[in-house]
Length: 293
Image 1 (cartoon, rainbow, N blue to C red):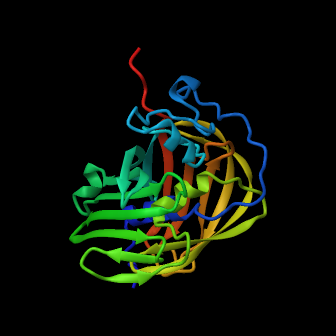
Image 2 (cartoon, rainbow, N blue to C red):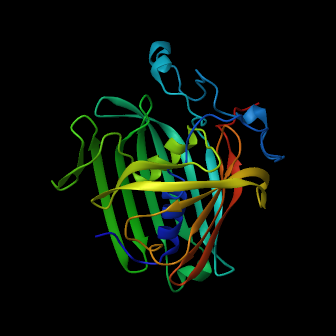
């Protein structure tokens, strides 16, 4: 059974990693990059076919050719502020850390961390970390881990996905059937970033989390210009409709703003939870590892 705990970290993971994970349709023209002085082409805009930034010499040119086209580069980093009922409750980050190999497949290692600030930690300390290992060729998940420390609650999870046999293999011996091309809650977000969005479209993406498989559905609503601490962005507003149990099941909608360009940067998330409302705002970002000059 999925967790029902109304936590800051749980809200962020669901809203960012799940919330945007299904809104794609026919190709659309990308707009100009958002007006943000902190981002320049020298730090990498991503999205170019054959882009090898950050791969290193240990990845052969032939292998690189098989990699799927993606909008991120190694070292891409997003920092967020989490506001809970109008008060700052903590921060979170998402990063494309490096390349790994899982069960013979080359994968991107994606890391997400969430921490409550010093004030919230006095009565509810959050120290969460999740990692997804995304196949560089097919963009499906190969492994997902999470290390949750929320108040007195603790959970450690390690799942490997056998995509050929359609199995989720949990550490400890449990296994579950999963649909073809299944994603975890973090890989689903990165997968959506590789796909175009069309206003008015809806799509389902097969996802597995906490021993449950389900389709994530997202409605693409409209374009809007949004201002957050990281700058002003032309965005696409999407609304996930979660069919599984969870903290958002009975409390309003989740609204997610993604940059309206080829990078699909997560800019802002707003949602209601059983204990109020949450807002997750982009405060800083880096689009690739910066070279020493």
